[in-house]
Image (tube, rainbow over all chains, first blue to last red):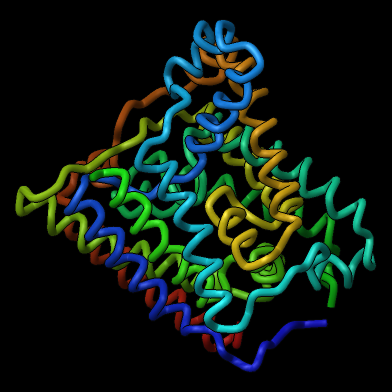
Length: 175
Length: 174
């Protein structure tokens, strides 16, 4: 089941180096470091505001990270758009609900995939907010600034992930 | 203007993530199962290039660092919880948006879950702020700051260590 796509993919070192240059350019031009998870807080604030704006306006965390469209919000939206464009142009766009490795372990279990993705997303975001960053904010931006918080969080991400992945997808990892 | 920069930077990053295939569930879980190091190659290269570039800018007075505080309670616990969720979802907050962009609709369920996770965190924030988030608060510290050394030797050590690690990964054929 291992997907060794006959490499249309770009070399990860080249793409990674370009991403590094892009980040440096961003820091130079706007002072903005990459990050993603705060955007989900702002988005959640938007949704909740639609239901009860008054309550949201009194909640400490939504005062700290107010529901608004900022640099990072558009950065995250841009990531989606850029990936869409690149996928279409390179003919790699593909509607898929159950990823290959998942199917190799659980079969075409659509409901299970949706459930685990939802649950995982909720846990990941709770954790990211508790850690004050995700693999972008801490993993990339934090560690490249040699921030102690970046390294500690990044170790946490991989420690939690390595154990959980082994438990869920098994030793053979869907192969 | 700043908003446009955000959008354009995001688009460029999204293209790189998609073309290097680092946003795929199979690659992210592959990394966590130590079977496919594509995302590690990408991330580590980004970090090393960014490290040298950003510190050059800072030393030339052209940019400032933007550090997050080291709070062991939050960073360790939050990091572990994030990792557990990441392994279930197979995407992180940034790559979920990109995965959706290339048609991986399971990312949508993950993003919905993320909104719920953010909402739950916002509810728990006052309690966490008075407990976990004050455990082991060391402020905005860097590794060279903690070691009391100049940052360049540390950067050189990281680049050297990173290159060695990547050579090892390549030898193993991961």
